[in-house]
Structure formats: C-alpha cells, structure tokens
Length: 126
Image 1 (cartoon, rainbow, N blue to C red):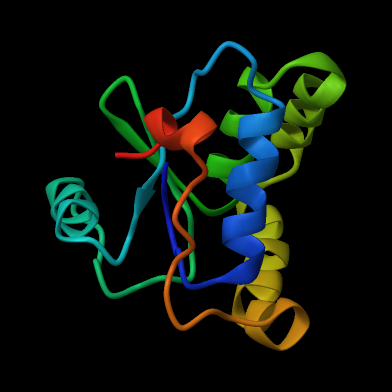
Image 2 (image 1 turned 180 degrees about the vertical axis):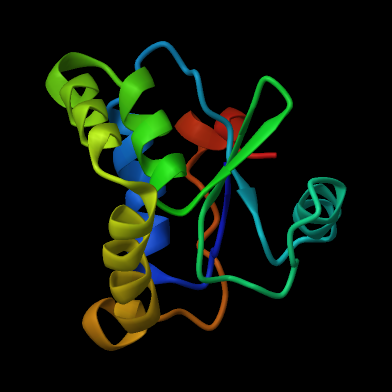
C-alpha cells in the first residue's frame, strides 16, 4: 500500500490497518520515497498526486475508494463487511473519497515528515 506519509489521516489509517491485519496481508510504502514514486509510475499513476492511497495486489493497482474497499475485504473481523459498499457506483464512492482526501489536512492536520515505525512493526514497511 502506497500512502502519503505526511498526512496525519493516512499515517493513522496505516497504523489502524496494521492493528486489524493480524495475518499481515499488507506492507506499506511512502509515496514520498523514490521507491514509492517508482511503483506509481510502473502502474501509470502520477507520483505527484498524493490525494489517493494506492493498493497494489496481484499486479493490479487499486486507487481511491476501490483501494479502501479492497483493503477492508482482507482485514480481520467484521471489517470485511464494508466490501458490500462495492455495489455503490464507483463515481459516487470516489466523490466521497475525494471530498475527504481534499480536506484531510484541514480536518486532520499534516506532518512535515513521516513518523518512523516502532520496532514491532518495522517489518510492515518497505
């Protein structure tokens, strides 16, 4: 999963996913890193567009609400149930996603630099 590591909401979401991903399905990569930018380019995504999280699974890049729902499908417990929102047309889901994304710094704040992961979760970051 490639995310904006300068975004408080994004960083908090990564830690929340780690907590709810006991089977360690996900690894995380900062979109600000050279490797993160290279992955985005590989999948024909704009490396300067930090308004979406990107989930790469089975050589497919999911963005916006698709990335969120594909992530929920793999989490432990009842979070899988959120995948039912896939029945809502993507353009509607993405409209909501983009509203939150465009306002995330106003709503949740930002960071000048990413926070280094604690030792117990360092293996989850690329």
